[in-house]
Each structure stands twice: as structure tokens, then as C-alpha cells.
Image (tube, rainbow, N blue to C red; front, side, top):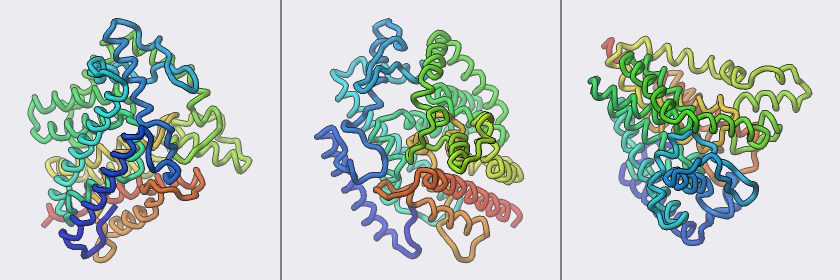
Length: 414
């Protein structure tokens, strides 16, 4: 996702415009036929209809508005499904009650998700400028992010990770002020993000890395408040997760696909293929945490070594990175959960090999290794290798953050 060294801004703009024209044409024709025109050309599993994930939010939010229990509603064409997200997700889709049809709601959410991604690209480029990194034309940056595999997957399915992205961008913007109001807004955004998809809770303790204890306490309060607001709905959500484990959990049914990345299941099933079953009894979330700890702990420590005002410059990429890492801990982790990872790279990756630190070189190499996953077009890659490439991308962002820490520390010393 990097412009080649020496490419002028004008050339970058031209490449970016070509990408955006192609993107608009692809999605324009896809929406017109209600099916991706790239089906069969993409390595991601594309359904015969667009926006299949918005159906649950559409039907169940309308049931909520009618005063019915949305968790008792069954939908789905292949097998009867019940709603699989926390109640707070439905609160954010009550606008569907005013939509004339599912198709209208799907198109509306597609446009909204695209605008959220545009906002996130703008915010990421602002962070990049503040870190003094080589400039990337905004049009090219947007085109590359829109064509990255997790973002393409998110938009094709019309999932709600873009809602989490919106909350993270709002939280990071609010935290810039270091005021009581800013902390409250950031805390509310993170509390809502947590009960939209669960995994964004990882951003709450990350506030302590940036010396924001007040925002951390407020965020815990909002997490509790949003949970208490609908305890019965939350109970129905957890019950649903337990009942569908055999259908959706790779660690339970033993089928591992290229578009998923539950790290614990990946490790257990990888060793099981080799005839080793010693990891089978262990909690898969604990296995994933143990595998990620050697990456996350040293980089977190490198941020803590910076003065608080300086480390604040890394707030957004670090939160994007931590939340991306948290998705690897989940028993159900599809690649649309990783829409934050290309944005973290956009914030901090220098895209250079010469005259830079070792961390910068490692980040660049790992980024190049991850390109077969980041691009969406069909390639014949083993699912277990594909997850290794996702880990390369996660590590690339981590090493790039470490390189930025070194640069910021050097600037302070100077």
C-alpha cells in the first residue's frame, strides 16, 4: 500500500484517481445487480447477494422499535439464524425502521461505511504528517485503503466494523484536547464500540499507555452503563454465542478458511495437522495471547518510554493496532474485523529501506510479505499460510510504531 520511492505527488494523484474510478465502477455495477461483479476473481468468499450481514441489523432493529424481542426473531435463507451482536449494535441501527426496504438500508449503510472509511483515511494522513513521514497523496491513500482486502470484505458484507472504526476516530479526536469533556466523549465512544463488537474493549486499557487514567475510568463506567441498559438483551446475546459455537467456531468444527484469523484455533489446528494434539485441551484465547505477547509487550514498553505529550502522537495508530490484535483472540474472527490494520500502516509505515533504523527495515519487509493478503484478488494460498501473512501485517505495523517511537525519542533528545 505504499507509493514507490520517488513517485511525484502528481503521479500519485493520477494513480489514485484511476483506483477510485475503478472502485466506483466496480461498486456501481455491483449494487445495480445486487452481486459483486468481481465474484470469482476475489480470494474472499463473496455471496450471491451484496450486504448479507446488514439483514440481521435491519430486521432485528425494526423488531426492537416495534417493542418485540429482537433475539427471538429468526432469519436467513440457508439456515435459521438469530441475532448475533450485543444490544448496543441494534441501537445504532434503529434508523432502519425508517427505511422502505432492506435494499434501501443496505445501500444507505454502504454509503455511510464508505464515508466513515474516508474520514478514517483523512485522520490517518493527519497523524502521518504530524509524525513527519513521507507524504502520500490523499486520493491514492483512499484508493489503496478501499481496495485492501479487509475493507473490501467489510463493504461487500456490509458488516458493522466500520461503526467501531467511527467510534475509534471520534475517541482519538476527543482525546487530543485533554479536557474533561474530551475524556467523556472518548469514553462514551469506546464504551459504545465495546458493546458493538466486544473486541474494541482492548482500546480501553490502552488509554493507560497514554497516561489518560481519567478517560480510562470514564470508559469503564460507560462500558458498565451500556451493559446495564439492556441486561436481558446481553444475556440473549451470550446465549446465542454459546448455541452457535459448533457452527461458527473454527476451534470447534475444525474447519479453517483463508478469510478467518482466530489465532488460537489456527495454532491448535496447525499442530493437529502434524499429528500433535498437546495444545487441544488449552484455552484457545490463552494460546493466542501467548503468541501475541512477544510482539505487543516490547512495543508497548517503547511507547511508555516516551514523555506523555510525545507519545500522544501515536495514540491513533496504537489504538488501531491494539484493536486489530484483539480480533486474533476471538473464537470467531473474520478478516473484515481487520479494517483498522491498513489504516494503522498508513499512519506509521515509512515505506523505506535505506538510511533508516532496523525496525523500519523489518517493518517494510514484513509489509511486503503481507501484500498477498492485503490485496483482494484471487491467489492460491493455503489458509494457514494466509493467517501467517496477516501476522506479518500486524507485526509490520508494530515494528513501524517502534520505529516512530525511536524517531520521536531522538527528536526529544535533540
